[in-house]
Length: 484
Image 1 (cartoon, rainbow, N blue to C red):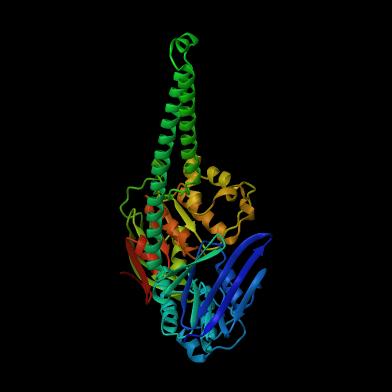
Image 2 (image 1 turned 30 degrees about the vertical axis):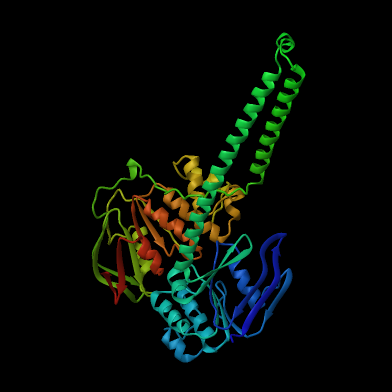
């Protein structure tokens, strides 16, 4: 019998009077492999910290029956030692003082896997991690025999590792059996069932409204017939009986209409499914390109200090394509984007090229404008379209009235991506745009890319993202740029 590793009973977590989590009861067993999904700020990391004991519930109890190992997304590597074999396997430099983002992630993984734990609580382990590092992570966790609780924006990783999905929405946790792809199918089925129920609700409500109206019309006709002129009434026999009979009949019909209205009020309303309309970004005449290869390189060597990253390479970036650049950490992907963004003299770039550049966390908003006003001022699109783009990137309700100076890091990334796609550019450079985005925001970004008419060159380690959006993939390997 599987032992219980964690139990949560009547748990509530609130911050500044806002309820973040509300869980009646959840249990995690020895061989559970759980993927936690939800939008940014939904409470995924908070739930992991509840399980680890780093966050205490406002109400309720969390029972921890095993010792767990933790991997926190934003935490730097600790000073704890790691297995030298793992350090070598992960190619972590001996000088661990100045580690890159990917190397820090590798160090944290080496420290996590140095000891065995009965449960692992892992928060976004693929951030900054190249494909080699992701393969190492998958290999370590594929046959892990303890309880695995994982949050990740990498859908391929979730598909590979988990057998249950916990979805956090409005503070509540819903449980779905299966990996992420199976969860998506179940969510689609729920949407279809909701739409069918909505259509049935609308149909039944319309039928009852029509029936009530017909009853009221009949009642009005009977009442009108009863209000005959005094002369006509005096001319008729049994006038008292007929007037009373018609009055009683009208009241009965009115009561029937009222009963139907009561039935309508008791109908359980089902909302319509909100369909996401495809977003298409127009390209102005001023930014149109006609050169089939707006960026070209001939026998180019990319060197930083004494280190050669690319040696004697030639390539052409075709117009209108979505091009992925892949390669291991430190191979030169981001450096190549920098050279293109600066329009380096060694590159052959069309004079009409206008480049928009997303560079990770390299910007700060200092404007006092609201999110909506700021984006409107920076683009030539009408407010309705701007609102739809912001809504896709989860800026809804009062978010539109936030000052851009007050945005969190994740919100700033989402806003920067919105600005790029709405800007007057014809080539976009995106350096790891999916880092720190939740899966819903990544899917919105995929829609942005699909609707963009210009050329996009992007760096990513997210294989599902690459598969969904790239027309062409270039890989940096052994100082060469190879088309896959």
